[in-house]
Image (cartoon, rainbow, N blue to C red; front, top):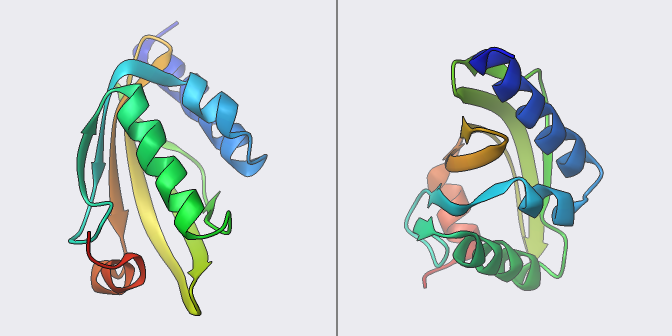
Amino acid sequence: MSESTNTFAVARRYVDAMKAKDFATVASLFADDIVWHQPGDNRFSGSRHGVGAVNDMLGGQMAVTNGTLDVQVTGAPMVNGAFVALPVHFSAKRDGAEMSMDGVDVLRVEGDKVAEVWLFSADQQGEDAFWGAG
């Protein structure tokens, strides 16, 4: 299997699990030493190292939003070697505030695992305001 074909296969499993809200499968696709780059200037911003730190951050986001955080992949995965770009739309509610915007998730795949993730938001200031300071 070529690198791009494998990357696409991992991305497809990731997309399918996200669509199904099967977060256990999403987490199982993370490399033990995954690096997650959360953009912006808010309580969740910064780089997380390791599957435990990433899962803690994602769990924190779900807790703050009472489980309303929703990420939907809105287009086909775009693959370039070990990298895949996923157009997404994400939304959430918390404490009377709402967030709904487009973004791009970029994954770097090693073997059959997601080794690194970069997130991009269409309105980073709006996202920062929604999550609040750390």
